[in-house]
Image (cartoon, rainbow, N blue to C red):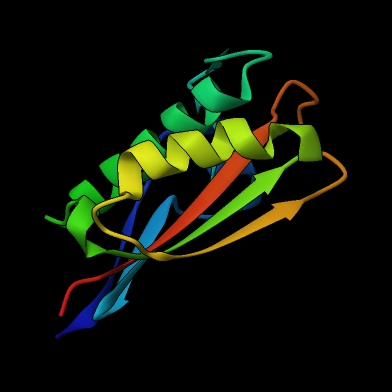
Length: 129
């Protein structure tokens, strides 16, 4: 278990203007904050909740990769959707990625995101014990 806190930035313009990190490692946990399918200024999977979920989870996994962790370290996922109709598509994306790992998971339907084209936002928690 590491005593130091380490932060990783992804280059999101919101990280600088809001003052946050993409991922933070503290002790035996690595937390990845809200991640969408934006890469830079490009939104991947516009209009497609399945594709947005896959891209967002992949980006979040890349963030834990900065700490030497992989998908097998994921112990929790949180998924936020703007439409209940997208539950099956996003659930399929989650299952394809995490079926072998089986983290605890929460899925919430929210009113919206900063950019109305965003349909999905995800968070991860990983264990590095």
